[in-house]
Structure formats: structure tokens, C-alpha cells
Image (cartoon, rainbow, N blue to C red; front, side, top):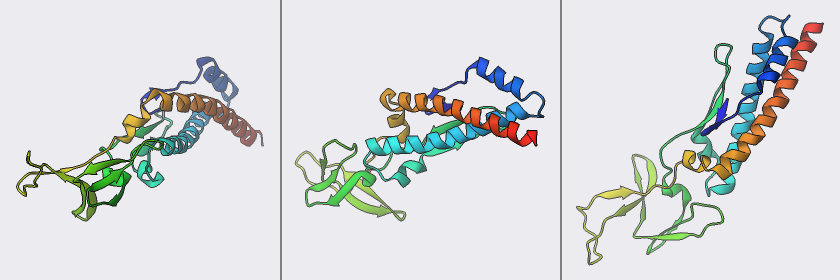
Length: 192
């Protein structure tokens, strides 16, 4: 089971204890593990989204676009939260268009920066921030290539140790808690 760039593992002694407790129930240990892993991964995804929302000046829906969960199954007793995608367009961090350019604030708590000569423009139905190279005298030349302005990738922010390490620590504790609940529930259902 892993989140982002780091992984968490369950204690082997604990896993053996689960197998022993549920040995009389067909696929009991696997069912408990799959349930615990999947529940932990869904909760961890929410925690990741919240933590990234505290760092990035982005809407939660935009952060969610780059997050997914790979669930565990009986054949594969592992799960993970995956963060991947293209760099986030700076338009998602941008304020309003000014005469001099566009102000952008990427990190919460950081400063807004003026991107001189940047402008908003819709291309293929989506709005982006663009910048056109200028000549040395500062004049625009229409033939120069437009450059789409981009910010960081969600996965790069998540990979920072100060973000991923506390999330992994919480996930380990949560997995143990969810595994205990899953074992208790399976034993309760099979005792009837």
C-alpha cells in the first residue's frame, strides 16, 4: 500500500495474527486486508487533497483531477493513492487581467507575482495564460511563438517530505485501525 512517492507496510506479525484469527473463514484474511486497504486509501486521498489545498492556491476540484486511487483486490493486496498529471496551468492560480499583465499566486502564504505582458486567451474552449516573446526593444512581434504559462505539478508538491511523510504516518495508523475493524466485522458476521 502506498501514497504518493512513499509507501507504508503493515507489520508482518500483525498480518499473521489476522490470518490466524480468520483461518476458519474462507478468504477471511484477504477480505479483511482488501477492506482495510481500500478504506484507508479513500481516506488518505481526502487527507492528501486537504493538505495540498493548504499549500496550493488551487480549488479542491482542480487538485482532485490529478488524484486517483488504485484499489486492492483478492489478487493484489496493495493499494495506493496516485498523483499524476501535467503541470497545472497558471490560469488556475491567476487573478484578474491588468494592463501590465496578470497577477499570479501559486502557494498559499506566498506573494502574488505580476507576470508582465501575460494575457488570458481561450484556445480550444479552455482559458489559459499566455506570454509572447518580445524583441529586445520590448515591442511585441506577432510572429513570435505563444507560450502557455504553467505552474507546478500536483505530484511534485505531494512528493515534498514535509507533505508526504505526515500523510504516510497517518495512513499507517489508519490502516491498523481499519484492519482491526474489518477483522471484528468479519468475525461478528460469521458468528451468527
